[in-house]
Image: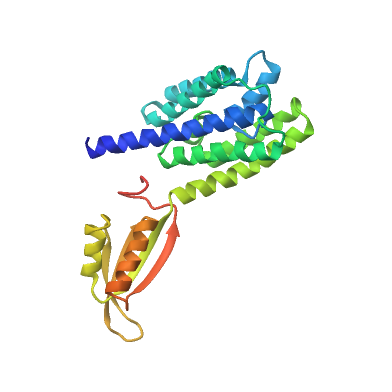
Length: 284
């Protein structure tokens, strides 16, 4: 199997796992508790009280409409991985109503259910975003708003989530509304944290006397690249070489150990970043 096929297979595997986590969190914890903190699934909880249809079936219909709207509006720019994730979330959520019907919440602890209703979809969404995909629904709507109106996706999603959460006041009691509002706040924090941790990289600046062995280790062993610049020490005035490189956390640790053993007098600065763009990292 070629490297390209392996990359595509890994992308779709991550997208599939992420979509399954979203579907599990929505069906087992969000639907039974009437949590409505954003997204198409939250809106389906409200609609299911007003229309003669289950949340799963409404979720399948609305996600299909959003997917069709995205395909028509955005054309070739619409990510196939988003379409794949949308289909998985919608179909699995609808099928779970048949395979594993629920008459109510799994436990008598609404706060515990809220935690899992946030955590599972958050991990799933982080996996999807890390592979340049999304779970469909209002994500597609936000992408269209950004493409046509220049509105940032974060703002578009927040607006839709606030409106959907507020709509729960029309059909549910105050406790459900408050839990949903709490879920909306927690969801944005948890998703951002997972995305940042999944994309976390280390930016390293190394000041040393001999850059060739270090760069050889970076290229030959770590399979990364680096940039070398000439430098001069301000205190002693000696000639130095400065290496710039970006690595995954495990690779950065191996490089620190190597430099400590081979050039212990070298000087290193290490910074964390979740947005490194270019070959081998996030796309530009």
